[in-house]
Image (tube, rainbow, N blue to C red):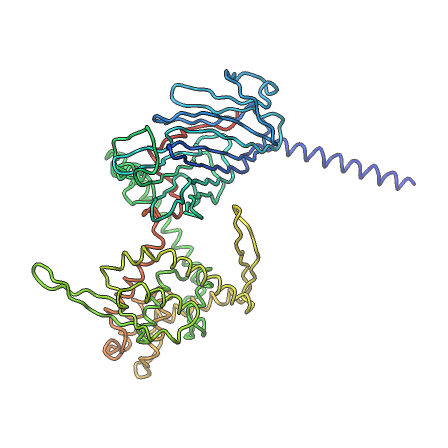
Length: 553
């Protein structure tokens, strides 16, 4: 009986302690867990903005958002909902009211240079607020186009969001063909998706982070009264200053600032290079002096792509180069030259001739890629002068093709016991999370040792045993691993007649393959073109909306 009483008392004490500890931790939590902003742009150029905020709060009496830099815009119709209950709008908001006086109330404070949208915190703990307001003349009319250039999340807020999603839409689909988009101030990305613009963070924001979106629209899409006497290029140039969309980050800064900033960057660069070299040397030390002469994968070379991507040992540029060299080797494409008349002389233009009857035996991803080239070229020929336009037209298809190939490759490795894949979710989207097994680590080691073999080929082989056909096949793997030029030099060093006896590979054909693959890769991954991609951590100067500060107080 005594033991039972002791047990019951112990359990009660444990529960009491747990509850007390939980409440103490819970009360100390003060964060904005998620911020989802939806923007609908009306025909008159105004925007209806809805913000859904999930927050756990433990201090202060009110929330507030600072919105300035408005131009001719005004803020109207501010309302707040929580659990289906609409807050009471108060005309003359007093920041000195108590927490109880502000509960379930909201208002607008109009300062000289900005608005403050405010609403009461109410009880401490978790809240799911839904805010809505209208911004008039949200769209700005420029000399040659229209734009949305708005800061949605401020820096210096005392409660930066852990996750941000911004969705922009109109009554017409927003597409890469008609609009251009860029994002600034945070780690994340921006894309066109289902006729909308969607920007997402991929890491919690910090105090100095902000979220700004710049979008260019064709003239005439919206009505607006805010007319700016500038071209879009002038606006974009200002926005790009300090961003990583361009290398010209401080071109307009004073000379003194340039010198100081350059010195700091140089020092940091040297330190980073030294650290990277130390890390690389330590990492590669175990492979030093070792090699294997066997290719990492004996099936279709491109099926190893997903595994190589996992270890950052290949990329789209290298993959496409490998395919082009393979097709040259198999006579599926030919390097052709056409003449173009110029003022002084005829100029030779290099291109690729894709042979239609040479694709019948291709399968899977390789057939898809070859067919993509074949059916979007004039008479099967892709000339250098047309390559930029071809890349722009097909970059979405190429990007999807690459994603599908990576998925197929990793699924194959999963089936062969190299890794496991599980469904996961981030920002409302599902993806597969990869967990590597020892066999996959052995694959990585094999690739590094094989790279050593290619990089030292001339010293590891005998000239009298050279098989030119084998060298041609190794060249494809060299391309896949980014060692095309190195392998070519090694093969020539071992066997000087390699270029003459190789039916397919000359220095020119290899250079053309590298150049064309690089152009496709650049078009697919280009961020500064306005097609979307990762956000720039800096830049975004000259935007409307936003300002600095906000949070709770």
